[in-house]
Length: 402
Image (cartoon, rainbow, N blue to C red; front, side):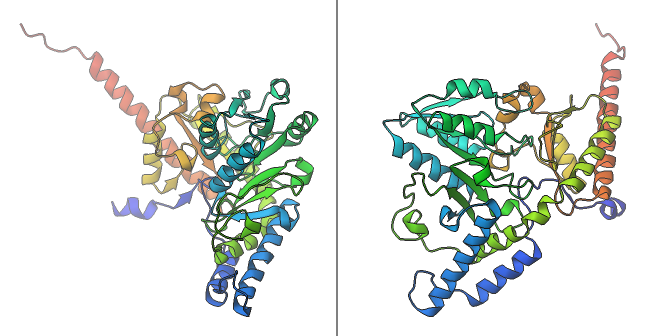
């Protein structure tokens, strides 16, 4: 037992769910908590100092995504931002334009909000994707008509890592007078983002995906596009979201954005880790299926199906050895249902429930890969042995009693 404890390591392979807070971010947040606690809506100097912290962070976030600071609004998280934009924009265009087109592989905060909007007489239609999770562009173009208020498509998928051609999607939508909304949460910090170049009208982001704090998100809304208040009761966020701001979290978000270019540069390292992991794993279990596309995919993300091995048991075994992985979105982790993303790309219920997601981060090293592969090999061999023993017992002749 002591030997097992000593050999156990802490390997975190779930960076798409959340990341640790980077030391520079933590330092900024501690300074703000200590010195800038005034209410930013107050007219005296201490309040104005707090307001300046918020505006500095807003400029940092805006610069990172290629936007103007007046186009960035802070929220408590990306889920709130997704709800705010989808609900208020659909309401703005109702009843003249009642159609929203999305994809079946969106984050639960988008899918479930769209399902709610159906109860409000919004015609929500989902454009199919191929086996790699990419939107079928010809079908999407045919679906957009003069009733379409918005096309909603995430930039990078959180479960399989697929990167969509948002620029092309934006061109299609604009040609028919529709706006474009993109959940960019998983993309920020992993690939370069410029909302102007992408052509999107709205986008959402979250700090805790790029080594910032939890409890703070943001949305981008192009100045020329409609925007309506989501939370009433105050003038904060230009009247769009009332409530006293979480100054230290906002400052942490801004500081995290200052290091985004460095995070993006890690994609080369992550690609090397990814190739090594996949190649070595195939030698351990030859029938493994890679659900993530090999190109136009986040380099830190791998979704795998282990035929004949339940993901729940595999995750528990890995966790026992100090390795954290997931079966998909953290926001739907408590559900026993198969991943809607994996189902959309053609997996059966059984295959979806034999799949896990691995996502690397800034501190992931080859030694972590080697340890994880060793543990997986041991577990797979144990499963084979158990099945063999079970088969022998079943086929063993027994005594016949009369």
